[in-house]
Length: 536
Image (cartoon, rainbow, N blue to C red; front, side):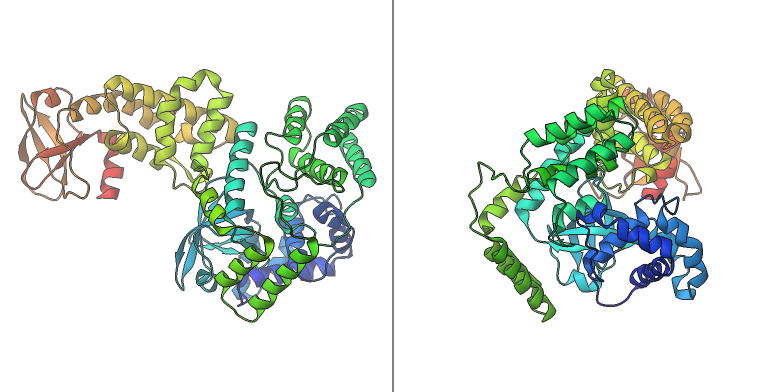
């Protein structure tokens, strides 16, 4: 995606050199070609080869090297790095593959991406691409952290402008998330088969060889040989739809994976890739045409010529948007239908929302908490990485956001919302090792006392319009219809009038928001002070 050689590109090139200098790694990389592409022919030095190298370095466990190759080669990378590559090897190991939707573009600056699987948002430092991409485009491949919360895209990542594809992906990802009760995991090998097809060569593994490979792989990983044959038979009996953008959700492959998850300790991602390749090979001579879609009169030769025309135009520097439009016409896409499909694409709940759904499925007895945890998902929608969601976020949600936007109508609502929040925090720590409960439990205990009071108090106070200027004031003492308060920036205390119903719920240490004329427009628990001052 970039023309200049940035640190990511130079770091990948150094890793490539280290692989070539190691006979064992070179042989291992070559041997992994069939696993990645479904072909025995290793590509040259193009984008497909780089995507293969990325997967090999940063995802694949190598039995030959006894580990992830990128980690094994990292010490040598550090020794060979100059000052401009210091730390680059470590950050390359933190890269992530995915299908990312462009959600914002800043001209000559960068791009905002949303991971369609996890819902995470990532700022991309791609000034050149910012002038070529538009909201709704898809970026497929790996992204690399480059410091200060920003990322770079792999130079081998692909760009797609296809609204029907985006809508279909969102639908299938939603189904996969519901079927697997969590965030769907996407590997780079799966992306290769989904988006780049036979980029590595036309010769796919034959059906017979694919079946033998699948049965051998399953047996080696602890599956009974007879059951392995039954699994292949199930794939043979279920039509393989080559237009489906994501497999392993509500289909025969998803059912097989769910069964394997229950009855074995097998590597499910490895099983997914192996069985997907087998399923595709079994049906490679008999593609399924979706019943509800018009048949396109586009041959493989037409598609190849269209792609060649697109690449040639891009090499000449022609307008990218016009090239995409031309490519869509040559491939038979209808622009109007694409826009209609995009409008019906479901909204993804974000990474925290996905974890909430997983929690509610696994802890079915907690279903009554859905109403309150849906509010947590709404609050945490901007969160890009679940592990970065912590105690400060929980305090902002429980100590402020619920009071302002949560629609709580009573103290009982507040208690139920906090109980649901505590259950979710315990589960996240037990099941995903994210220490939400350890970090937030003491604050949650105090909120269980204060938040119900403040919900009741706020029912009797005015609410400030968005953007209204208001000072923070700490309650020192309450009386029948007033309170003595201290504004931190003022040397003396103030007296403010309050409705008697509100005064009965307030305590020394609680916080108020005061308009300039002294009207109280909101009350908050003492625990929320760090959030209140951070936002003011």
